[in-house]
Length: 107
Image (cartoon, rainbow, N blue to C red; front, side, top):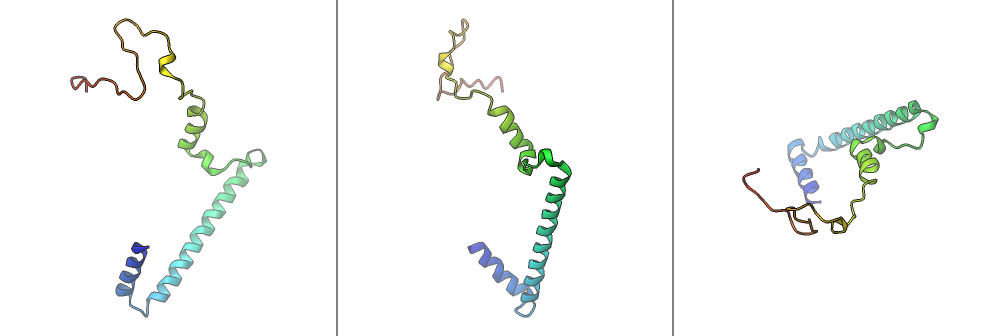
């Protein structure tokens, strides 16, 4: 809220009290126009996808979301490492909460 108040004071000083209302109205009109264009583009994409893909949202097309949904959810990340079979000779068994040994020569 403080940042918004600071911007309002700077705008009042830069534009002056007589130009500020016209500038605010122009900014609001521009924002409405951008929102309208974005909604139109979103509806065009949905219409072009066809009826079989009507349930899909644009967030599902985000690569991060798709990766999380289709790859990471299928992994058993909660599997207990200590339940595995005995480690090979010379290797330590990993345990939760303990970081692996740090070797500065390998980095």
